[in-house]
Length: 274
Ligand SMILES: [Fe+2]
Ligand SMILES: [Fe+2]
Image (cartoon, rainbow, N blue to C red; front, side, top):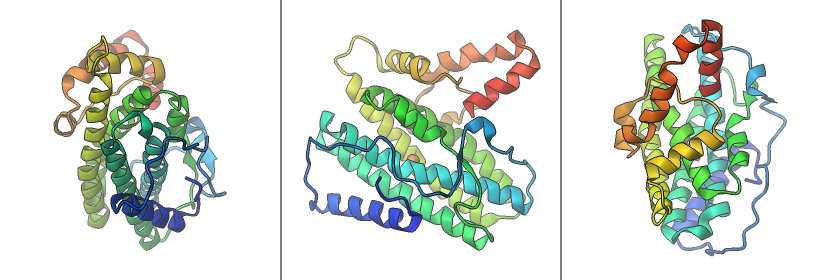
């Protein structure tokens, strides 16, 4: 998290995960995590509502903008995984750290793939602005392990499962098969990341008075103002253990919004969830 330079960050993440796996790192309970991970001047970080709108067409500029946005998500995902270990690892069995160190290494691999793809497409990571919404979600849940699991893997990464198939289809339609394949591979890894989130969330809920589903709904209401926007990738979510009984109520409660609010409001709700 203290390494901002992209290539060095990829190396540091993979080395940390490898060292942990090989028993070279101590399992300590007194780790102070930084409030914010180190960042370079690029990409410029903008509030979500100041981000330039991405075009939907399959031209090169739009595809590069999409690759750049995904690359930034993966870059931040490295920090999210290691922050989970460092901040909350002492509250869980050692297997928690095993899982999220591995996730951190996979996010570094995803970021490396996208970074390289941007280069071979004539751009680079940092060429475009990016928004800081993912880390803002981490900050909002920095003092509550259950809330962090509820929001980061179970809302935000699960959202990735929903939107990635459409992105793959867009790259395919534009003839960019390499990007499509890359995203397909990432999608498979992300199912496991969501699955780890659900598994540890369920474990953390044991002994509480609420069911995991009810506890999750309350945390989503409390910490995630945006609505959960359909369509949901029900099969990928179910493969990750995030079954429909978790999100049905949240999804249903928003199904009526288009009727209740004029269409200009509908757009706002969509954006908040995206
Ligand atoms: Fe990822
Ligand atoms: Fe992930």
